[in-house]
Structure formats: C-alpha cells, structure tokens
Image (spheres, rainbow, N blue to C red):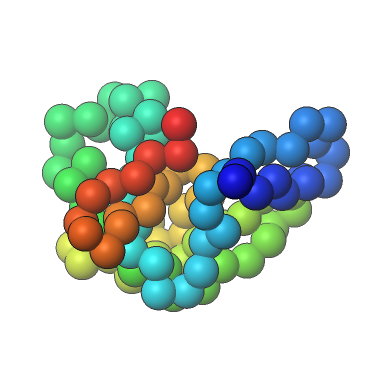
Length: 93
C-alpha cells in the first residue's frame, strides 16, 4: 500500500512508497538525470548513504555521504532513488 505525505500548499499529496531514513542507500533518480542532461555522466552512477533528512519549507532535503567526491551533499528527496538491499535501484515513478 502506498503512503501519502501531505505537503504544505500542495492540494494533492504525492504518493511515495518509501519514507526516507538515515542509513538508506540512494542514487540520483533516472528522471532527474535525464531532466538535467546528465544521464551519461559519472554522476548517474554515484551512490551514497543518507546521513540526515530535514524538512525545508515544503520539501524534504537529504544530506548524503556519497561514495565518490565532489558531489552536492544536500539533495531534494524527489531527485533520489532508493537502492534496495539486493542492489536494485527502485525509482519512484
């Protein structure tokens, strides 16, 4: 069953199948990489671990400790995909 989070100012809550937590393994989502034109960039293969999640306004921002260097550490969770325990990337869409 999908969970829903009501966001301030958002009339229809977004469905999410995962509530982000410290320790989750993540990657940038495929949709985000395509939208930013970086689908073939090294950033598309970056993996990291969430070390903190905070609500900033109506957005959830995750602080990420990336396995590689020189990547932004604070990322909107809507731009992330969960890496399951079996290594498969689970996109939101």
